[in-house]
Length: 144
Image 1 (cartoon, one colour):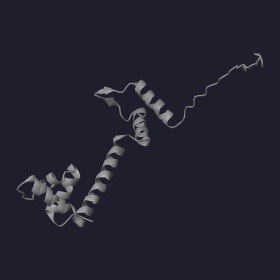
Image 2 (cartoon, one colour):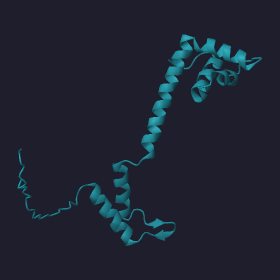
Image 3 (cartoon, rainbow, N blue to C red):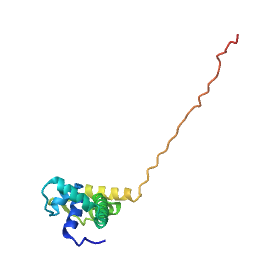
Image 4 (cartoon, rainbow, N blue to C red):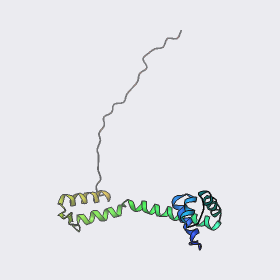
């Protein structure tokens, strides 16, 4: 379903999805009302309209998708991090705040890139001499 043909209904749906307040959404959509009670009553009637309900559901789905996309974009993915470290180690980024990037930063980028790609494996060797514990039941129990 696309936008509603009635401009005020479309505005109402958008404002309702933003605020969740039917009275404020009704007034913000441009409907003329004498009181908040009248606006609330008229908004309730408008919310019973099937097209309005469908549009609100549609807008809510769009809001969820945008929120998920924003959250996804907020965190750099592994491939993006690897591209960044690669540009540093290759010297494609040569300055930071007007100063040349020191070699230790380039080496660190190389190390982090290698770790991300699994090039380094830590081998830990352990040699445990564990003596087994033996429990002897040497306490006799008198039966009388």
